[in-house]
Structure formats: C-alpha cells, structure tokens
Amino acid sequence: MTSTLPTPAEPLKIGTRGSPLALAQAHETRARLMAAFDLPETAFEIVVIKTTGDRVLDRPLKEIGGKGLFTKEIEEALLTGGIDIAVHSMKDMPVAQPDGLLLDCYLPREDVRDAFVSPHVARLADLPQGAKVGSSSLRRRAQLKARRPDLEVVEFRGNVQTRMKKLEDGVAVATFLAMAGLNRLGMAQVARSAIAPEEMLPAVAQGAIGIERRQADARAEAMLAAIHHRDTGLRLAAERAYLAALDGSCETPIAGLALLEGDTIWLRGEILRPDGSEVIAGELRGPVAEGAALGTALARDLLGQAPKGFFDWR
Image (cartoon, rainbow, N blue to C red; front, side, top):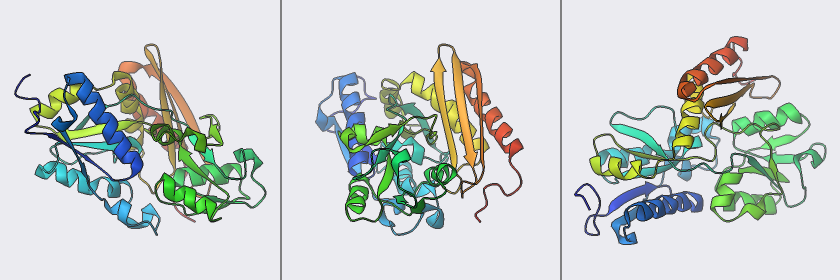
C-alpha cells in the first residue's frame, strides 16, 4: 500500500450532514473505498457536521440563503483540514466550488424520479380538488401548480422521517420525495408511486452523490479516482453546465435530466414561473464529449424564450 493511502492510525475523515440519508450516503462511500483498497472500517472516520440548512427548518430555503446552506459548514471543515473528503447530495450543491476545493468523483446514480407519498391517495392524479400538498422545493411546487392549479401547496421541510410525521399529523395529504433517497434508506415502499420524468422532470443532479476534496490532496485524489462512476460524471457535466448557465439556485424553479444513449447525450430541461403559470421546456442531443457545451446551449435556448422577470415572485 502506498503512502498516499490511509492507514488505521491515520483515518480518512469523511464529512457529512447528520440526517439518516446523508449518513447512508457516507456509509456507501466508505464501503466503496473499503472494497476498492481492501481496507478495514477503522481506516475511515465519519464526521457529522450540522449545517445552517439543517438547523433552520421553519423558513423556506429562499429566505435563508438557498443551496449553499447545506454545504457551507462542510466545505469550511474541508478547507481547514477538519475532514478529508465531503459527501454531498448533488442536487443540493451550488455549481461553483470554493477556491481550493474540487468535485470530480461521483458514485453510480440512483433512480432520478420523484416519489409521490401519501397515506390516503395512490397517485398525483387522484388528489381531490383543493387538497393540501407539502413541498419545500420551488421546482416541485411550480410543476405541481402548472398541472393542478387547484391544489394548495404548503411549506414542508425536514428529513424523510420528519416529513412522514407531518403527513401523519395532517399538515398535508401528500408530499414528494426523491426515489433515490428512499431506495438508499431501504424505504422504497413509502412511495405510493414513482413519477415518470415525462410527467415531472426531476431536479438537476437528482439521485447523484458527489464527493468533494481539497485540490492539492494527493491521498484523497488517488482514492476517489478508484470509485468514480464515469457515466454519472458525464451526465452531471451536462446538467450542471445547464444549471450554471441559468444561474440556478433554490430561488428558481428549474428541472433538468441528461441520459446517455451510446455516444450521444440527451438533455431535457424545463424552467417555470414560480407560480406555475408558464413553463418553458426544451431538449437537445449531441456527442457525449460535448455535454457541458450542450447544457449551456439548452440553457441559453430556454432563457431566450423567457420574458423579462420570468423567475420573479408574484
């Protein structure tokens, strides 16, 4: 074993949020690294870091700062050496990393679909007129209002367990979760149905786990290269370039999904007015190697169709 790899006396510190899903993702990362390098569990240490997004649950994300609230404290720990790598849900990640940090390792992507979750109703189409639906996602809220303007959408934040409790308490009759998260938690049965991308295009990078490191850390670089999933990286290069060109954040309803078709990448995108009153959608296909350029081109195409103030709240 080379000196760039961790030893039990010098564990590789894996930073993560503390929710059950975040811990499951950190454990998956550790398991893949253990298998790749034939290392014991003691060669790693999982470090839980509480983020602002985890602490403030009573206000919408747009009011307290957006996506970076789930990553800021973790990235600070990475920069100061408190941890060696950071495991993230990629749909929570801003498109730019702080100087000195690099995001170039992705695990195999899970199911990208949204899950419809309700104690009483089997499908989105079966919701009664005027029903209350809980969601903290601007993308899901706008998509829902575009399809069912009669529904009342209420703020719904927290981890899977918190949201399930809110449904039991009658705060709403239904909500949405990511199938990927339910699968990783062994809770796929919670979904009453999975919603096809054709009906509800998912968030950019939904279902993908990314692992961030310090740019100059040779040990982390060598280890993460061994578990990087190339196809997921190619898909996210297109999706995140699309998001970057849209200046996407938690304050803008944006959906996007890239699929590989042999040597071709198929990218679909959708931007919505926050109240769901207008939807602009498009798609492009091109060579896999040009995925990032394709993402930028699709974003510009959609923005070119959007009137001034398209994303403004009414």
